[in-house]
Image (cartoon, rainbow, N blue to C red):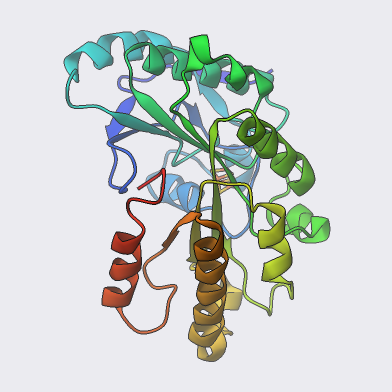
Length: 277
Ligand code: SF4
């Protein structure tokens, strides 16, 4: 059984473009990504967790709903979109208690007409189809940077298999819910050689896509010379793919060659197309 903790606050102001606030209602994450996980590095630096082993034994925030009931009225009019999650995973694979709490949180936010954007490396549950409980305007996403299961087991050991992840997302899309993909951190070819076009072809049903490079892995430093060329080529492939199909996209800063201007132009051009931005 998963451990429990209490927190003093839950809703945090977000710094990303697509959400005003975010919620991290679990401490740690059993997915244990080895890219490495930025959230884990941060928590370790702040002394919240001891090590990797501590991180992969998540703790559920027991009083999350109680906190939401107090915080939502205080933020009335200021809060429109909440992202789940930045420093944990809302549908952690095979963690039933995390899934149940996440569903209750989405339901509570939607009750006050607060939209949610959700991102997971787990499986999006079919329960989300119940639009009386969860509304129709949430945006459900999965992270997908490969289709290779050997790579997944090495870099995302506790996550859901890629096919299961895609199937759960496709199911929601086929039932008219909004879906998106986070293709970040996309690995360099000294980590895995793979066909980006083939990965994209599996998720052509989504409404929008975010593409970004790998930043913190030691193998990236060995790849630096080709790095820009590689990511520039990938970003162009993603852009062509999305434009051809009317999929909204955002190329993360630093992924495309040279300049911020080019990147921010891409962002602006597609602002209206994307459900997320
Ligand atoms: S799923 Fe996200 S939060 Fe969980 S370990 Fe992986 S990168 Fe970290």
